[in-house]
Amino acid sequence: MKTIITYGTFDLFHYGHVRLLARLKQLGDKLIVCVSTDEFNAQKGKAAFFSYQQRAEILAACRYVDLVLSETHWGQKVTDIEKYSVDIFAIGDDWRGHFDHLQHLCEVIYLPRTDEISTTEIKNDLAFLPPFPDASND
Ligand code: CTP
Image 1: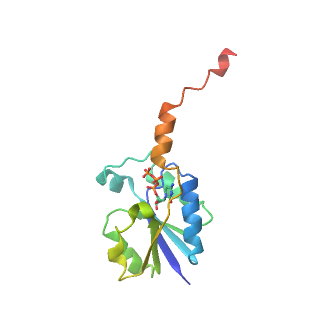
Image 2: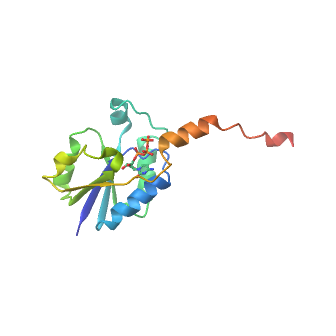
Image 3: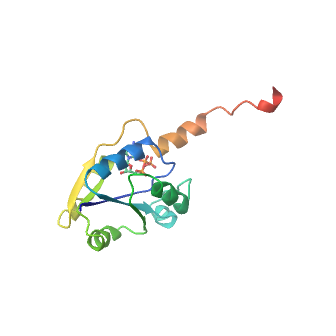
């Protein structure tokens, strides 16, 4: 039984997230996704549109995900890997090199991101969309 763990905010869940989770699940048997809490995001200077509870609920409904946990601080990865007997820590390659220090605990893999999609891009694109025409005027 091979356990994979990953970490992220996963706000406005999109197909880049789906494709990453599908590839992560293919690496083994059990996929654990640790979702940044709103408080942890605030520490990182990030604000999610969906709350932690909403993001965790969406991830738990994804067929590739076996277990959803909260991530509350940077140092948690070491204890999670030990506690859940993790074989592979994997994350998108925008984080390449950042987690090499975990290599003494488990395998560390950086997967290529899906091109041309991100939560930031969705937020930016929506901000510039013209408003929908008012149907009540038809
Ligand atoms: N990810 C991916 N492909 C994308 C977007 C994200 O593989 N196009 C991966 C990231 O590399 C990370 C995980 O999905 O491992 C969660 O990333 P997250 O930062 O929550 O998503 P982003 O869309 O990158 O959000 P943001 O724009 O806020 O950074």
